[in-house]
Image (cartoon, rainbow, N blue to C red):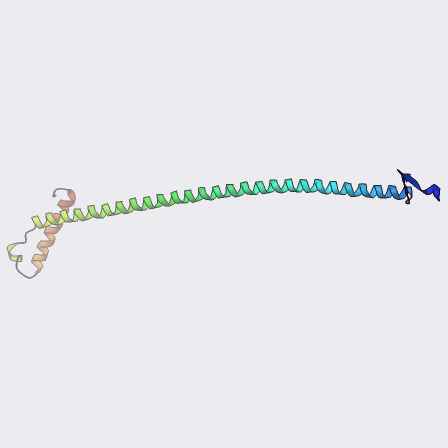
Length: 149
């Protein structure tokens, strides 16, 4: 039995050699697993950092795209409002021009039309209405031709 005991330094080991080898292998496996776990953790942390950086860059790009889209939408809205304003101003000017033309036409009509003496104070008669219509038709033809203004 003494022959099975091994000496390590000054102490005597009570375990056989194969047990020492088994313990050494087990400790080596534990250390290898710990190193492997550490390496995997380092890899995963680096990958997580890359993913986090990419997400932050995407968010920054998304914010920039959203800002650019808002600016483009604001410009489209300003153009639309400008177009509406121009259209409204053009319509207002056309109405003003038409009103001014109507007023010139009415002034010219009042200046030129004089009912015959028989139609001045009397109630509307067929003859007076026909006279008014003939003068009005003649007036319209001349005015539209540009001969009266």
